[in-house]
Length: 172
Image (cartoon, rainbow, N blue to C red; front, side, top):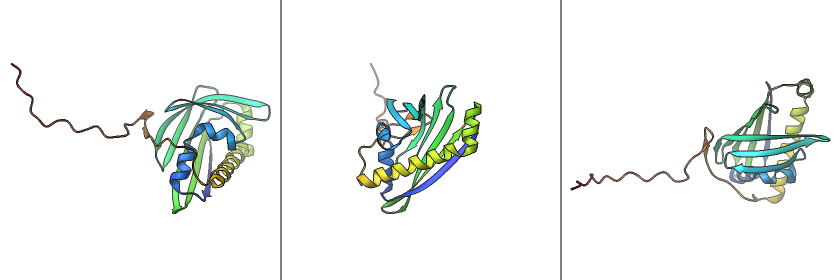
C-alpha cells in the first residue's frame, strides 16, 4: 500500500467546504484529472479519471460520511484499488483544514513507479489546491448532501419515533 496525505487550509467555514465536497458531480469543474462523476446511489459513485491520454473508470462506495467532519470511500473492483478519506476541521470561524488521505494498492509496475516518483502526491496536492481556489472563489457551496453513512448504509435523517407506551389492548 502506498499512502498519500495532504492538508490545506481553506478560507471558508467548515459547513461550506464540506457541503461543496459532497457535490461530486461538480468535481470536473475544478479537478483536472476528474473527467466525470455519476452519483448512482447515495453510497455509490462512478468515476472517470484521466491524465493525458490515460483514462480509468472505477466505482467507489462511500462507507462513512459524517456531516462537517469526514467522508470515507473505497474503490470497488480489481483494477483500481484504493481507499480514501477527507476530513474537515475548523481552524477559525471562517477557515477549515481539509485533509485528504488516499491509500493506493500497487498492482502493476506502472502504479509502483508513479507512487515512488511522487506522482500521486503531486496530483492530490494539485487537486486539493484547485478545490481551495474553486470554493474560495465562489464563497458559498453550490449544493449539499447532509446525510450520514455508517458501514456503507445511509442512516435515517430523523430518529425513529419512540414506541407507544400504551399497553396492548385485549382482543376479544
